[in-house]
Structure formats: structure tokens, C-alpha cells
Length: 165
Image (cartoon, rainbow, N blue to C red; front, top):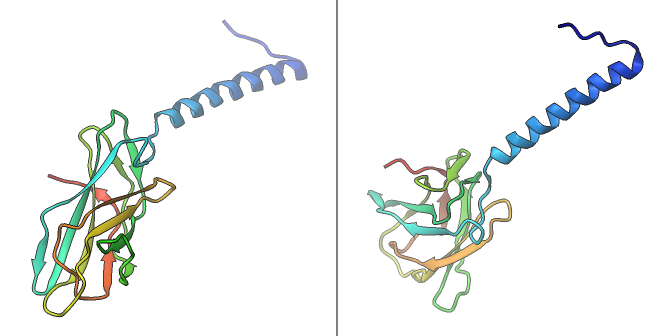
């Protein structure tokens, strides 16, 4: 069967059908894509993982896990602040390290990022807590610091990547 379209009205009708079909395809595709992660909406938790020491440098991974049922996406890197016992910010500088990749977090999918710093001697105030702020308006969380005390004033923060067990 062949459909003959004639005139401007016929072309407009075909264009409207194509636009409608394209719009539903775009809407379905964007609905299938995970949204930017949020501590609250996605019930995310952050925990210290096992650190790796090489000489006086410590590589401290932190894992990001979702307890919700939906998948979300982390991009870029977290903003970090180390805090004392009273919750005041300690004077450390943070610099970007290895660039992250777009990482999904959800059921059976975790993300990780690393802090790298020098440890060793010296009289330094140990952090009591760490504030992790997610990119893209994902909020922040404060958790207990459970790593060695940084003795350098500069800490490298790597971007998010998938946690590979």
C-alpha cells in the first residue's frame, strides 16, 4: 500500500508525526538515563576503604554507595574539607588529581575516589571529621575521619571512578 501525500497540509502532517515520534524517543531516552547523585534523594553513604601506603605517601580511597533502588551518576570530583573536633575547617589545600569518569552508583554499583597525602612525623592537628560535597548540587555529608593524619598541607583529590572489586 502506498500513501500519497500532496500539498503543504500533507507535508505538515508528516512533519508533525515525525516530530511527535522524535519527541517521544528523546523523552524515553532521557528518562532511561540516571540523574545526578544526591546524598538525600539517593540515600548515599561514604566510607573509608583500606588505604595504601608507599613510603610517606598515603592513598586513601573513599567509597560511595547508594542504599536506594535507583541508579544515579557522579561526574567530576568531590569537594573536601577536613574538620577539627568542633567542626571548624582545618587549613589544608586541596588540588585536583586524576580526572574521574562518569560513574553510576546504585544497586550493585559503587564509586570510589582517592585522597593522597604525606604522612609521618611532625606536630599536626589530626582531623576529626571530613565533609564531602558532591558535584552538581548533590549535597554534603560529614563523617568521622578514620585515616592517618596528613602531615602535608596539600591533599590531592582524584575524581570519581567505578569501584572494581
